[in-house]
Image (cartoon, rainbow, N blue to C red; front, top):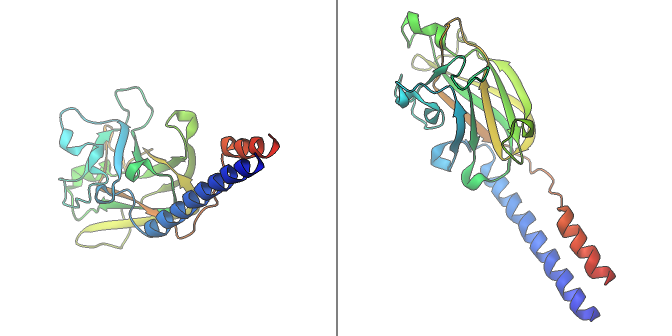
Length: 220
């Protein structure tokens, strides 16, 4: 009987080690990569603020890697018809994996790229939130609140990338909330949104279920 318990315990330990090594390998491969890109399996899960009349400018254009002026640009209502205070979108990574992330980047259309009457639509303040579990409002916590500077003098072909770093966190879902723009009373626009895997591997903790199983095997 003791031998059987020992074999089962060793098997459980082997499975746990395999999961840890697999997680570490996935994190290493994701480090520095735009893990939100559709080309890397990133996906839009839910959103608010989309414009029914302009579906081609919906939230699904945020991570499509299309950097052409309007073809890949997201345009949403300042105050969504759904009743939310601000437009938002929830994204997941490939296979809805939980990975460590530590930076984001926004591709904005500079004043040289868009008509003056549309410049005020550009996103200004944003709130980046993450969840390592569910998608309810209480599951998300903010990791970064900042401002995109439309006047920043770092232009590339009349368009601009702006990057923001934060302490590495584990995330299964990422929620981007657009808090304000540069004055337009109806719309907010954003060209592209990228999320990068962290260089470090976050610690992995065993679930309570697995620990309980080991304890029961040892005490039977």
